Image (tube, rainbow, N blue to C red; front, side):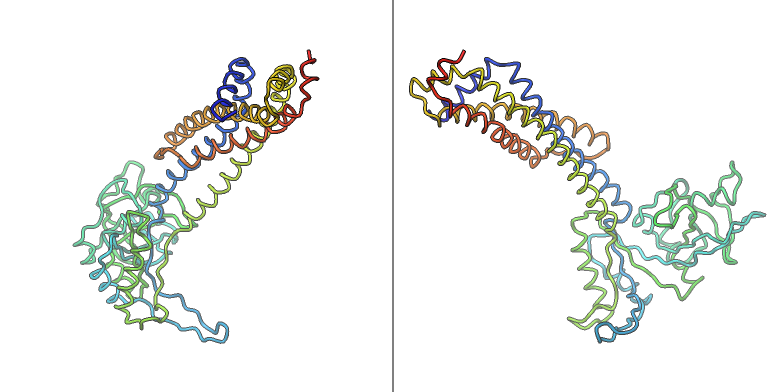
Length: 408
């Protein structure tokens, strides 16, 4: 009996037991839909959260002075490299030819005390200085007002953008802070913008921060250590862009070819790595739940197939008496089991895709057809069919034809 005949015979047998087949396929479908649905949802959620994390720095890298490492390591004396100088940073900004947006920034102080009329804040306000690209690179959005102009940034005008919590500390509830003048470190600043509330991140809150133009910050604290941050819109090009920036800065710093770099190029990818770890654990958990469901489904299907063997004992005896071999009987029952599982598997894939697409759209992610999980679902349903059908098929093939014909 060839494969085509086996499939036709199996389909004919399945049609005669529609309710049993439906219940068996439904059990398989639940397991496969949970597998495909959970894994598809995780991929969609990861895509959505990765896009959100891009604004938090996963597509940003920093060029900064090397940290001081005094002493010896394995008998080799560590080299202390000089910090990045302002003229070197200016040269880098001029020569940079990558695909990102460059911003230069520094911290003036983290213990500033702000004063406006009779109100004074606690000395816990951070004052940062940056150029007109800082808001874009850092992912800060303005709630009201405007950003620095290039002229204000380069000429060191005394203007400032403040965090949302500073409004409550310095101004009345109905008072508009734009164009108001406050003092910090003995210098007056005019407010031109207010940042949207972001909350704290790693112990540092943007909501309690004042941002002033870069040249203004240099004037207030000439000894500042500067950082160069580069934001690349396409996350797949970050590593390539880091290489471009590293070469440019190495030439500016005159680092010998083949020697250790005198500066650090660091990518802020800790959030992305943490997300990958979490989604990896979620996939393991989802796969484990689906495996347990499919294990129960395979046991249920095996039981149904064993009952089917008992009910069709006389039919098996007739087939053997007219020339069917044990291999033909075994293959027929195996094929039936696989077809039932394939019906359940296809149904599970469809329901899983519907569930996964719903979760993805709800999370604001971009849904794409998960071909890998579809193929995995079909493959697993086939394996379940083979495992569930083997014992009943083997039992059917070993039945004695004479005893089978006597079976009532």
